[in-house]
Structure formats: C-alpha cells, structure tokens
Image (tube, rainbow, N blue to C red; front, side):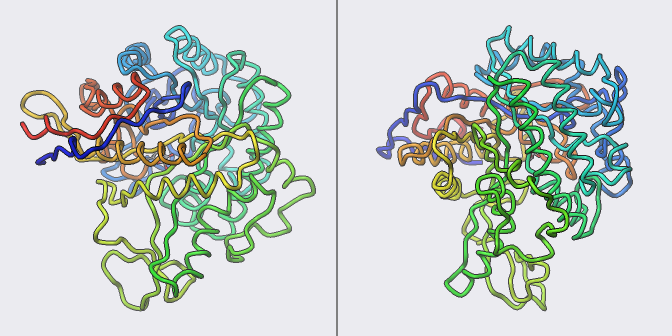
Length: 475
Ligand code: FCB
C-alpha cells in the first residue's frame, strides 16, 4: 500500500488527560487454548467450534494463542508495549467446569497468578467475568434463555471475587450482551447457535439480570472494586429524513435494548415486540438490579450502521434487509473505507456515540472504550516486519475522535485497543487478524506489528501525534 504523509498539514499533537488509562484487550476463549488443561470444563464455544459448518475452515479455540501455557512470555510483551492496563476475561468453565457447584482450584489459581504477574509488572488487571464461554452444562439446561443461568453467574462472580478479588481494580460483568443475544440466540452465527426470537428475547433479559446480580455480589464482596458493563454500540445513521423513523427503531434495538435498562431501568419503547423481553419474564426488582449504579460504562465501538428505505423484495449489493421491517435495510455507503471484516470505518461514529451516551450518564459515572480496533490483511514482509498502516490509520482516526469527545466534555477515562494478539475471531476463526502483535499460529511465534510501536508511542507520550505514515512507502 502506498502510504501518504499527511504530516505537515498543520495537524497538531493531541494530549490526553493526565491519568488516562491506556490498555489492550483480549478474551479467554480467543487466546488461551489448553481446553483440556487442569480440569477445565466444556464451554458452548468448544461445542460450537467443533460442529461442522459453524466456524470458517473448521477452526477451533483448542490451541488459539496458547496463552495458557505462554502467559509469562506474553505478559513480558505487554511490558515491551508499555501498556498500563490489560483487559482479559476469566473462563467460567475453568473455574466451575459445569457452571455450578464446586470450584476447580487449578482454574482459579491460574487467574490469581495472572493477576499477580500483571501487578508485578505494574500493569492494571481489568477483569471481564463473562466474555461468551458459557459452561456447556448450563446451556444444556437452557443457557441464557433460562433465568437460572443469571443466578449461577452471580454465584460464579462471588467465587471469583472472593478467590482473586483482593486486587481491587476494574471489573466488567458482561461483554456485549447484545451480541450474545442476537448472534447466539437469534441468528445462530455464534454459540450456542439458536435461531429463535423468543429465546433471544429471554436471553436479553437474563444477561442483563446476570449483570445486575453480579454487580450486587461484587458490591458486597469487594466494596473498593470499580464495576461496569461493556456494551457494543454503533452510531446509527438514517440515509435521509424518510429513513429516520426506521433508523430510530434500529437504534433502539441495537443500542437502547441494553443501554436503557442499565442507565434508566426500562426497555426502549421503540424496540419491536418480538425483540423485547416479554413482561412475564421480568420479575419485581429485576429492573432495579439491572439499573443499580455502575462506576463506569465500557463501550466497544467498531463501526456505524446506515439505514435506508429501499425495495427489499429484490436483493441489492451492500444492503441487508432488516428482518421484519419490509422496505428497510442497512447499507454500506460506498465512500466509506472498510476494514478486512467488511466493517465500515468511520471515526466520527465513535465521537457521536460518546457524545450521545455521555448525555445520559449519571454524574460521576465514567466511560472507557473497552474495545476498538481493526482487522487487516497482515503479513510478514520479506524484511521480516508487518507494516500494518491500515491499522495505524484506523487507530489514529478513532483516537482523534475520542480526544475530540474529551475536549467536548465526555468523561472518557481510558482506551483499550482490540486486540493485543491476533486470535480466534469467533465464526471467522483465524482468518481475521486484529492484533498489535502478529501471531504465526503454526509456530506460535509472536511479532509486534508496526502498529504496536505506533500505539506504544501514543501511550508513553500520553498524546496522539499527527499521522505520519511516510516510512511505509518504502515497502
Ligand atoms: C467484539 C468482541 C471481541 C472481538 C471483537 C472483534 O464484538 O467482544 O471478542 O471478537 O468484536
């Protein structure tokens, strides 16, 4: 790729506030491997990835980045990167192999040691309790469509809090419940692979309830911990005035379905009936638990969603009809760049999202970007390096948007790049690389990409320099 040098355009460095938390993110099933080690139970992702036709090329997380066995080396890489915080998740089936009952001590010990080794390296652990690896035994009882799973999640939370919680620090209850409910229960693209609106609506409520119950347990077990939830949010844009009503529905179902219960204690009126949890599932006190005060809201932002009115009875390139809304589709404006996921890249969407959410945030509640990043067609060039200029451009654009939001009053306290290492990208297996660190999966060799040194520079200076991709033009 011929790189451009926009430095000299008058662009200036953008300093971030003192104490801004710079980190990287990952999750257990995507990096750990070692699925049979030390008494780990089976998760829904083990089952799903071993089911033919579910994951591209039949990839599984059996080995992944082998982080479970290589964590020392990998944590040393974090020091070289210069990160202040490491967002990881604990695998429920390592700690409670069947999702309830006795604790599997070696599993808990792994995470205790991980936390200790992070602290010894002066890196703040940011712990996510649920990043999608539900114990298969709980799925066999109905998974998140079953209210009891939320109770089991609360018990699991308490085990983790009591077992390794003395570091205080930041806790994220659930990662992207929207994706779990929609992909796991409605479209079937993710584990456990259901395609049932009623199950998805039930999972929606029980994931939120799981968050509320976990929050309650954390408050009593660890009064000093800072607790939040991570939601995947998209800027939802209407193509024109005629599409605004449809875009408002899409927005309510995409963002509001989880944001409104957490921040306001109610489901969004605009979401359609089959998407909303039925009243019969919502028990007294549920919405109070779900909307109990959090210390921060984690936002995962990748791309905007564009909505238009169109003839959905015939297929159009770059349009995806919204199920159940005849004449309405999401579309991909041709003028916007896309990442190798095929996702639109639009930093202004991050800015708009941060501004919109901040307006509804209770006083004192902070925001963190707990994930943001881009997949690219990375490869090791003949000189032995990975010149991932697309990732640097993506990162630069989104950090500039975050900076602008801070200038405009958004209480954004940190940013976590997704992901630190290339890893198992769910239904895409190993075909999509998001990492700052290239992983050669056959040999497990790690190689920091050019974006790693760019990000390292940002973190150490606590400021975003003008974009300068000049050196890349030598390739
Ligand atoms: C998010 C997930 C994360 C990763 C990124 C690309 O939806 O939380 O695990 O797959 O997307």
